Figure 1 (cartoon, one colour):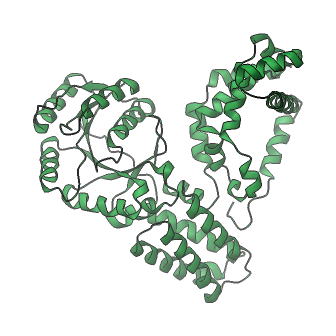
Figure 2 (cartoon, one colour):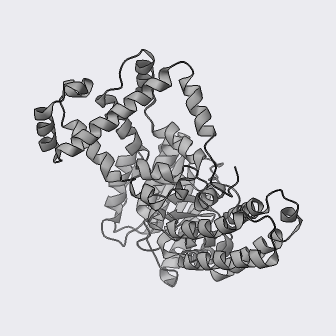
Figure 3 (cartoon, one colour):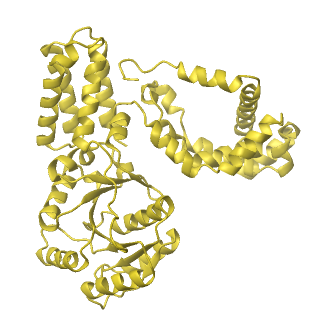
Amino acid sequence: MFEHLSERLIRTLRGISGKARLSEENVSAALRDVRMALLEADVALSVVKDFTEQVKIRALGQVVSSALNPGEAFIKIVHDQLVSVMGEANDALNLSTTPPAVILMAGLQGAGKTTTVAKLARLLKERHQKKVAVVSVDVYRPAAIEQLEVLADEVGAIFLPSNAQEEPLVIARRAVLEARRQFADVLLVDTAGRLAIDEKMMDEIKLLHGVLEPIETLFVVDAMTGQDAAITAKAFNDALDLTGVILAKADGDARGGAALSVRSITGKPIKFIGMGEKTDALEPFHPDRLASRILGMGDVLTLIEEAERKVDKKKAQKLARKIQQGKKFDLADFRDQLQQMDNMGGIGNMLEKMPGMSQLPAAAQSQVNEGMFEQMGTIIDSMTPNERRFPDVINGSRKQRIAKGSGTQIPDVNRLLKQHKQMQKMMKKVTKKGGMRKMMRGMQGMRQPAGFPR
């Protein structure tokens, strides 16, 4: 996500980070590169102009000239301005109303709206303990209603039936009554995909808005459409009075134009960001965290939150007790760790949120291969339970059988066994007296990437 923008900005800011003094000349040179990076990321021109002007004013002001490290102060200004452009802080959903709280979901054709409805239902159910009902008033797209029914069953939401022969307004009125009867806390209404220029469809959604009186009206937009996403959201907002925007398909957006343009152009906050196809791949939008990720500072808070939600705590505690008792870290434990990592979106997702990882040399980054970890899991799955518990019994003939069963080569099996041995040694060190404290001190002492705020 935002790889191109991040790479350009980091390279530019690294050049100014060591400056003992900031002059109008070197600030202007850096901002020329920043401007080009933002334009290449498909950020709206008006947003780029305002961004660079604000950074220049602050950079040449008293704040930087009095700083101990002007270069680092400049980077902080860029960071803070990115946060300001994207909306300062997360704008949570407003559900303070008599249940059911109605949320109307609007969006263009093909933006991923129905899938986003399911993702939002799951998020509200799992993280906020809400009883969620969903209904589709999309009577135009073939199988739209059936698609929502399947997704509702997958995420554990109440599906309220409708059919393509009904009028959307009739479905909407009935859905509110049924959601109330079933004591739902939230009702998500999935509308038909439409174009901003389609007057008939826009009139229909205005009528739906009037009938439902939703507490939230969210516009789902494809992040990969760049600044066009912001322009389309503004057109909808002029007709509908949106309360927020959801950026879908952001995991496929290497530029970031939509995230950096929507708030400025529409005046409406980005509330959520879709980061994958799975129904758990929807995250609250935190401008400060995203700005840190764009500038290569990582996003440790989100990483911790993901670990809290997705790591199997019982398995983690069981492994901790096992290691503390002096028992060996076996291949079954290794397999569990691979699974936990996969639950958190894989090694790439985790490293993206680690501070300074974007500063790794290209050769080191190329070694991070998701397929390699999948292969490890397949190799371990091809072993017998006894081999997983006692890897030392794996001899040449067993390696041949394991390689054949997993569709790999003997060197792949050898590499896995070697990596497991290294993890065993690390676990042993951690369990020694003071080992964990020493490891944490070592991590704290790791050098911060040059020029980046701590």
